[in-house]
Image (cartoon, rainbow, N blue to C red; front, side):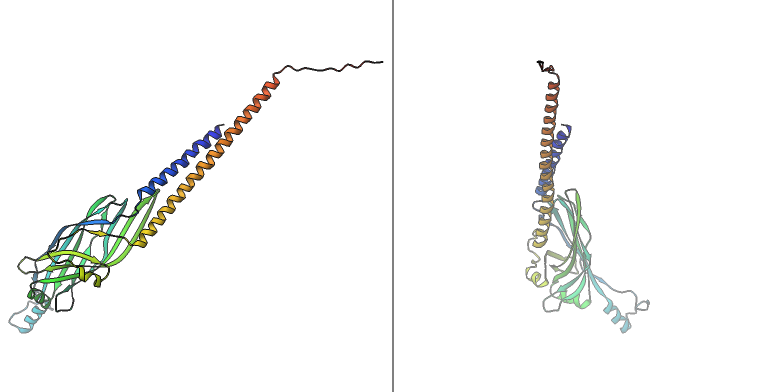
Length: 303
């Protein structure tokens, strides 16, 4: 009897597994919701002229000597830096980290000129906790040669900046008590329009990203366009693979739960029935032993 009760109690463990797996399945449906990033800040420094104060040999330049003048002019650089910050909301039940695995090469485009390599762009690692938000900041540093700076300023300071971004995104997901880490590395082209000015009125416009440069160039917003929220997506194949993994894991746990319920209930019922039958048999034997014992004697007559 006790064993039968134990089997029946164990069946509740199977019911618990069923409920747990169903709850986890519902918790991760959908498996991924796009992260929405809302613009917070767009800022770029005014152009600063950096003039070398020493020659190649370390001596001070003499501006009355033509070769020194030529060296100083050739080594003069125009620098600026900027940043774009966005507040990204993660509505998923997983932590997500975003960073650039290496600095991106920034090019400056102005009408009538070939694209000019002009700087570097990077994003430091940012962790966006599950069901929370964090600020992702892109930092760009530019260094222009005098001819580049002159061409940009000569055209009113208007230019388009395009950077190849080397992204790394890490996901940390805990499902059914198991921790799973996944990392995806990919490239994108991101760009924005900018007005550079020596007087301090430099302006940077909204940014946009695309998978290829040819896809990006036609959709870069104008400098004065509204800065709309963007999203961080995952590919269709990645999403479908994650959904299959979720369904398989939860399905296996539910199958184990069903098996536990069926086996434990069956064994418990059979055990209890056998125990009851044994008790009835023992009781019947005990009752039979308590009845009066009659002895029948046969008498034979002799002739």
